Image (cartoon, rainbow over the protein chains, first blue to last red):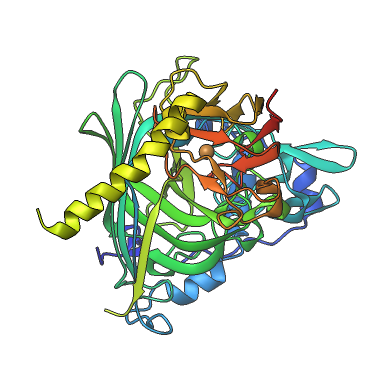
Length: 340
Length: 141
Ligand SMILES: [Cu+2]
């Protein structure tokens, strides 16, 4: 629980020199064809030298790098103001919503406009959306032109079960953490197959590309314009969130491990027909819990991610395997207390 | 049996008498109607976060039955105290709020509408997703 991901990923060579930071107009002019959500090895082999260069440049331009550099080697991180905060989040009946691959509508508050784009640096899909991957119409961005786990398409699955017990002690990203997470979650498809996530064998005590606050963060704001987590999710007040290394199971067997598991209890970010809303449309007075196993893995020894599909074992109608889990629990019992 | 309880029993019997006559005259008490197998309207609660149909019409004194036909937990709630936006609930003046509580998959809820008017209700966990329904109650013919 206290082994930091930064050590897990640590490299003996110092953090590489930053590339020249170039303007957005230069980025927009270059056609970048990345199969972000396709299997990584294949996609990266298909990339031209120019595309590889562009990807490297976007990753080097990641805006959180300086902040993370200052924190990731801290051996004795500060505690949360006011002391530890422990919480339990449970769902004991009812089903879940499972996101299916879809194109995300791009919110101008988060992504700017073609002549003044925002949120394009970092690993595509993790902290940024490269401008060449954005649809444009009438001088506005329209949608992310790749399929991602962040869209309106979804299905429901029965018998959702969630048990999350966690403590937020450590305030900042650091080399070690006193934060704790135990998560067990499961749900069932129509054929009676059970899918489950277990977490966390260790916490992501310092984020490779964006802050993780020791692995658990409480009463903060994530996603959207914040740069903490993908901008493809709207900016959302987050009562609690965690990032850790866990396992993906099908019918009781581990089918993928280790994987980065991210969970968060947020204000409600879905609208009519379960549409993923834009920043101005969130419902601050309702909450839901999101569980995410993204189709990415951290690159060993470097502070970035590369695409890697999750072996979920769930087959989509087109015969392909769902390459991620993005599951929402909405029938929640929530408890929390301050102090040890 | 103590004299006190005998007295209580007698009182109860006296109270039941007129009630039984009333039941006979009216045909069905609200409780009996709630158990009835033929509500005036039925509404399904879906996986796509809707009440289907979203609007039903009944006469005063008739019952609507909701069935959770989804795998998701829903509620049928017409209680302004449970709502977080004004648009979620609308009740005709003088009517009491009602709330099914949590309805697991396949569970049912029934409510008998006595006062004519338009009732707007919602589902608590899916209020943000605008899971709303309407019951229009017309005067009994
Ligand atoms: Cu509902």
